[in-house]
Image (cartoon, rainbow over all chains, first blue to last red):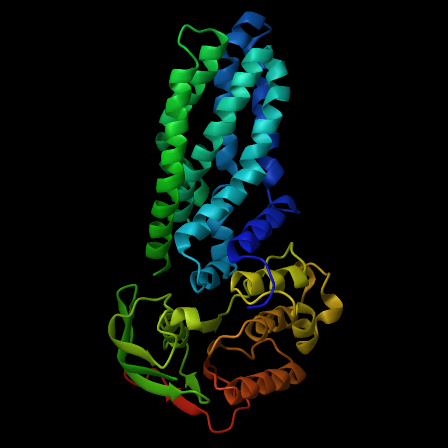
Length: 226
Length: 201
């Protein structure tokens, strides 16, 4: 065997390159996030106490919608240019391929949201402890959003306008992540719950989706390709 | 190595595309599949590679790698080129070489074989249809797999590139590979077996 990258490493770097180059859409999610959250104070008025109280909810909702934005292209673009056919003839298990594609997608769309959140949180009058809690919940929660979304992306792969269907399919499944993500972030801001309880459940949801998502998405893709 | 099909049938979208198709191709042999549009040439190739369900009949590979499926020993050159327009020519080929576990040390030489070495840094978006097809063909050369399944391989290629492709195919057959090509036009292989689809309907 000649020197070279591992197949999965090659796939990871290729997907990340495609995402950050022209037309890849990696920054689209962050921009959307920024726009949605920036508009909120204008809609709600300059009530700093109110903004501080609902800030975590707004940021989480923005992150949830932003993380869905580019998701419909995750498998569809590979399907349209024939890459998916070739990926299926590779010797790497499809579940791992799907997981790596999901990871690449999170690194290019989810992680920027986490990084941008503290900056955008300033618009919502969040103080340092709240910012910290928010970043931590987003860091743990956004992978769950991506990996739940994987399943929807795999189901919508052959559809021309899969984006809306994807949102309809995926958003209900992300409700638990949203509830516990916001609960943990709020707990750190206003209490009275301890931060640890909802945060632990959020971690559990993420771990479960990291395991179940790739298997379900791979099964959907196999079915779809027939 | 012997790839054989007995009484294969294909059903897509509730319609029988073909039925009762039998053939066998041994190492060093080529099979050309012809037939009118919609006769199922592409479906047959996709069926061999495992992308279309076998509705009936049997497909078997003797003396292949028992650890691998038939599809994992095939190169499938379809209508789509599987190239990412935002990646450069070299990056595209390097990805597939790495993904298929062939290593990326010979990428430059392989690109030279298809005459794209001068364009290695160019994003694939700027390639012409024929150049894109040549880059797909480079994939066959960069990664060694014993079975080549070529769907209209000469479409969009100029006569010089068609000649080069015939050379690659002859070298592949001489090295003990086998190939099946769906085509309307002659592909420059003497002594290729022929299969005509669509006689049944």
